[in-house]
Length: 198
Figure 1 (cartoon, one colour):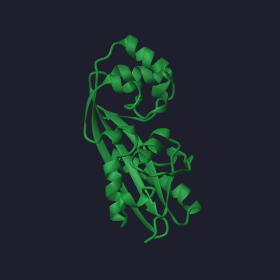
Figure 2: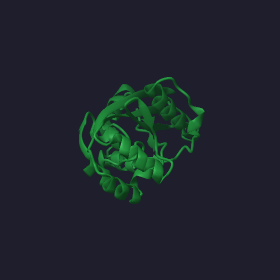
Figure 3: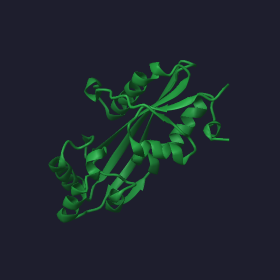
Figure 4: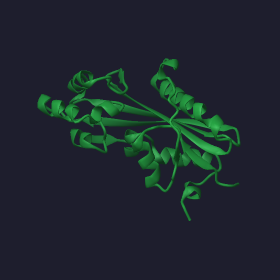
């Protein structure tokens, strides 16, 4: 079986960097899918539904590719959070999250277009937020970083200093679980090493 093109249906630079870090050179094709069109009763169904919708939007353009869609959502004390809409929202969210434990869900949808096979999986990581003071929260939000991220923090950026510890997959918090992706590739008959440049 020949190695297909790997397409990332996401505009996330963090997801692209994660793939590159394990030897996958993806073609980036953001889906621009309207996320309000997906409604689900539980978090896993929601993140997998959004990931699948993103991958399906892009897949028809690549008849011989693997297309990966992802979507992340943070849940703290039963409240789900995506990207904050503005700085005031990010500040209020951090004031709620500090000192608490969040559940970071990332839905993954991998479509093998040529084989007409699709796999969906969700990674879950527990994030322990530091009990940071208001001044730190204000400075962090002013940096702009939280406004680009589900959950209003970037583990691989300044936000990493505001996280006490994590339980589970580190890369899942950044945007996609690399171990989970490896398993999904294997389920479709590929090895992750197939995508490493010779």
